[in-house]
Image (cartoon, rainbow, N blue to C red; front, side, top):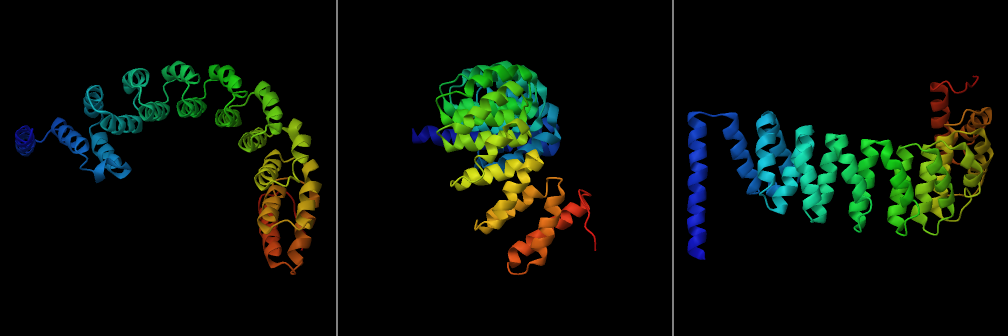
Length: 323
């Protein structure tokens, strides 16, 4: 066995030496691609880490057309660690000619990490041919693959995915439920919002926070009363999420509840967030409240934030303050 390793080592060294000699005599793009691939295969770029992949990509990208053909051919015979590197590079190249080979890998390679990396690459390429295969993976029994598919479809933004992802809003896995909700934070759908409002009462906090986030991103005024019921929640993450969402919705109804937070004994970071959200709402009460807090030097921190957000309001021409 040792003898075979020695022979292999000698043969490989001769191969590399031949490439170097040929490249010196007649350096061609193909030779550069071959040498770069060997360096990638042998982990000569920072042990194949993300920096190494980036270095390899930069060299491959100089000879993009040749590199894509070469890498697609090598992808079919590479081991999984090398496949991960090739898939990442093909994704970074964003060329639709790589879609078919990546879809083949997605279907036939059972390695979860490879599937997720391939989904990421297909999303970067933005080819709608990937939509149907990704929809199929929404029904995978592997949570991470399902979540990667949800995220991927939200980036490709194809409306035919909506009905499938709506079903996941009621999934028994809270991680999948919360990621399905986040999908509809990016892809607007009124019927999905109806289901998301119900998720405000979910037993899982991750799901509830995702629902609050989605409602805020959709600027959903119909959910405003539901959010105001949660603004005084004893759970910090819920309270912060609601305050943020109220700033996204920008409805004057939220002004008084947010001002009450400033008058309460809430922690400073909660008050700052309340000021940030208030600054997004066009309402005279906000201007004068900030002016009062600015002039009150008993709490320097609150006074500083009030001055900052008051200036922000003035610059954005939301309101004006007299001298």
